[in-house]
Image (cartoon, rainbow, N blue to C red; front, side, top):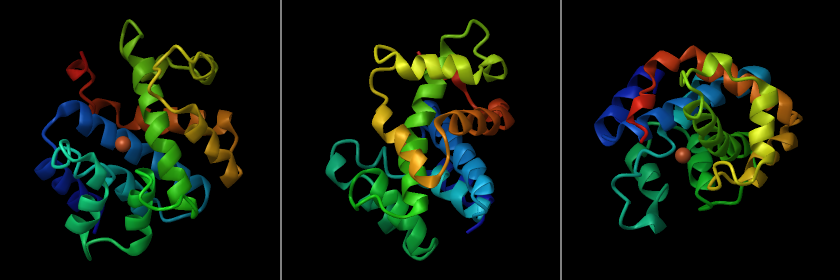
Length: 184
Ligand SMILES: [Fe+2]
């Protein structure tokens, strides 16, 4: 599967603008992480784009969230991608690099979107690593974001500061594809 096909699937299965924006930001972070780690950047980006593919289908049955996605993807992606998707919803132990990356990127996406939304211009361009770090430390800010999961990135030899920097860079590149006005 290539990125184009992943985006088509996303369009087919996800109708909520906020969720599409979330999936695209996780994809953007995964791509940057892969580049930093000399991994297959398109494959990592696809894992990010598709990780919540079944979200709307499993809304009333969250126990099968991620499991359903893996069923849909079947042989369209390899086991590494499927394992990362399963692990992000704790359907598998988080072990391999891509699993750790997706687990952490999923949460960081939430923190960054929340940080962008409180900016008057809602533009990520002005968001600094320093200000993001402050929001990361402020547990009252974006309470739902699990900071522990973001910290797991250090297992891959990436510091929190580097993680924030590459994520801001990656999301900045796709900012025009995001629909931040759809967040209320
Ligand atoms: Fe997610």
